[in-house]
Length: 466
Image (tube, rainbow, N blue to C red):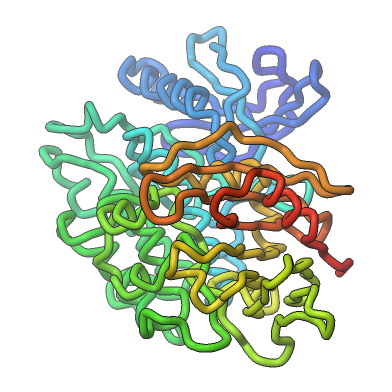
């Protein structure tokens, strides 16, 4: 196929890529004056009705899910020869395959990227959809107002779990494809995507091949990747949420006693019991702690790293961690100098702190009010405040309508949960902090207090220019 001048109403500019099933062109939408990606079914499959329907299914699926972690569909159409095409949002940052060609990233950014990829796959799994072809070429980067976001693409091989049984067609990419995908009679489910995530993790960390060597990678992370890539599906994590939670625990500080040591504090949603559960912990543990799979928080702990210890100033009214300052309510203190598991471009922990009447007990005692406040430049490049809050539901809790609170130039997206056990009220909030990144706060308000108490606390969060 030569370069067409037009595909439907879209002017074609150049070829972006070609695969076994489709060709992707860079196009221009004259109505919106914007660039788009146009995916067209390959000519050699034009007469296969099954493949044509699968192609259309991908567009319908992406359109139905319409999630920022997945490539978005703007429109669909059909060429004069009957081949379908889909108009997609342009992932202008290229693919993970392109970036890996230049070398593997350091361990902390690699683990953060793997977490972002798993979050996208988890969106599919919650909708009972299996991707079945997770490769570096299907992990894309799209620009946002403050950086970029990871998105999952190419669901042409995806299939609803309800239909994924018996006579499943062989599909996938060697090196990333789970062993059961080679068996046409095997049942393919979310665990084949867990295998793909594990293989992506090995590739990101510089350990491809049948006997990977992962120098400098923490042993708990290696254990998670080994379990994810187990030959038998039953030995793997059940889905992307469970894999992501295990990776989060493994990437955090080593497990220790249930009571935090002086100078350490833990966010309320991720108590030490989860960290000690190890890679065998699954959704059952998360539910017992009042966490949905998607709501298992990215951070494991706020670790003191020495030096710039977050503590009140002499008048006892401010707590600080890096550029983040929090105005302390009367009788509250601050602890913590870093967001464990979150690293900046230089490999340093991003700033975070806990404020509470008793920071040491806040993570494990549901009667103690307080808040975790963190700032992440890396999250700011990949997530909006609304998306970040939306990824933190809490099982068994009743959510109030999400609201927005403006405090000066800062607009907080706030979600409040009423829970039948543990902490009766839990608040998740996020805001954009300009070029500094994404501000996140998890608040456990004092018993009986209203939204004004939370709003006052959020109003007291200040980020110095960086």
